[in-house]
Image (cartoon, rainbow, N blue to C red; front, side, top):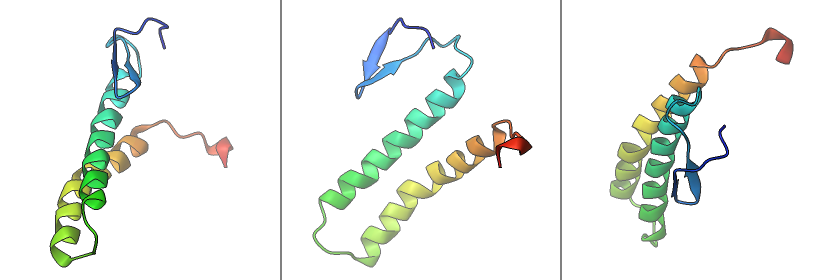
Length: 81
């Protein structure tokens, strides 16, 4: 990654969009934002409830699916096992 940092978001540098890994970085950043939302919801609740569980699932299911998709798109080297 280029050493130049055009912007810092949540203590994570904003890379150059021309960087090869930028699309993955961008998607992971959005996934992390959803996880942060879920953590905020959790931190505001004292007890578990079905309503909160439903809300957490609604927040976390889409980014979870996206994370699995991103991982599956990464090249796989059979020698890594």
